[in-house]
Image 1: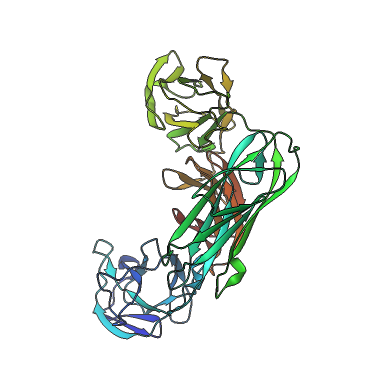
Image 2 (image 1 turned 90 degrees about the horizontal axis):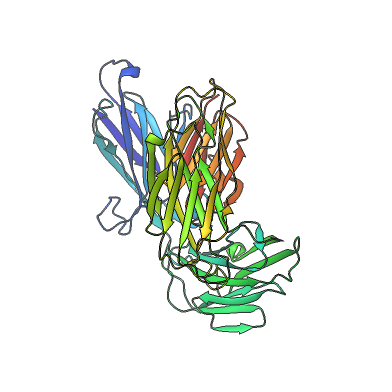
Length: 476
């Protein structure tokens, strides 16, 4: 038999019974951090979980701690030894969610029994009372190509309005300033007024708690804007009383570069280990011909290290016909109807995924190189960038985690984050206290490396849009 007590936000797990070897007796303990709306200290069906809350479990003296963060639904879990006193502590909120102004008013008791690791998970919920009348809105501005603005193109910028407070917010203004020399093309929704290169929106529809509202602005960057110029886009709220006003303004500072190629390719993973069985390729194309394109063909010649007998076709933006000739793969997108990027930056794009098995016996130092070609209306082939997958040393252990769009590969203290989606994403690396160690923005199909500060620690990587969160545990 075991007993749990909750006193001022701390849960004490007491394990009673005979002597049993600890290494053979472990179980799952978890639950939900939730908004206790009626303050009855119990989770009711209509009470929602609180996401991205840091939870700690340890021995009463603070030793042997474990950390985790609640998911998007407020759930958390730990695996712990039986018949030992453990303490679960709800730490302060992290990053955006530090402003959820909550406290635990409950003192409650519950009895439970933690069985072996084959037993069902035991759930213990942490009630939180949210203080009312806390208005807190965070403004973030994102760009499609990270820190680069592309001349001779139309780039889409996004204003993110995230309600981090404890009540809905409305009746305020949003201002967005476009740098001189650039032109507003269109916005969704349309601004209420435009003065020069400054756009204004009146927000009258309430933004509910934890809701994120987005405003999209397409900006034309003329060829007259010189390569290497530094430009700044800035968004801010106005006429709004905010309890935490320092995050009511956000800007993006970019360097103007020449327009990117209409084709792009990436590969996942970028390093192989002896246990790697498959690699996945992503090819993106965009119509920059100046006219509407009706047919697109993608041609990819495979390396001999990839067996043709194990090719798997993945998702794509549009229907296609697929054919193979020798070691050449071909996708034909007939009647695709892609507008030119200057008319529609989003609908002018397409993509495809495919994966291939890796033959056994690849030696350390070997590599697999691949380049694809894209033809618009049967014209001159446009080469993608070349991607290379290298074989790591046999002693290297690489770990991979993530979902279908975001993958993280770890090799020691080196992390590689790869964005296999079709949209740019912003990420943050956090330590166990919730401190932001690094900000990172990845465009679609791109990857970037992060060097962790130290071993023997826990880190969290999450996307700012809340669609991805991953715990990274580093042991010495």
